[in-house]
Image (cartoon, rainbow, N blue to C red):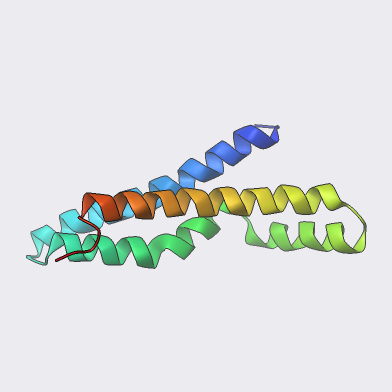
Length: 109
């Protein structure tokens, strides 16, 4: 996984999968304890979103190192690469959240 595109795809689907998995399994757990699964699914999807973004990117401190080297050492490509990783993670998390919204009827109850 040396190239930019394979890593972007992996980050995208990791963020997406974390939200989908957490929401669906959380809804299963909610149904076992007689809580409304749809409500729990929406809440979990919203609460896990920022954690999925951070986890999909990986080492958050490396991002700050890359920004520092890009800004202070003139390595603009490192900054652009890290921004692409963040945007890919955001897009994956947002897609999963939109899918959960669509699956649950858009939050209407």
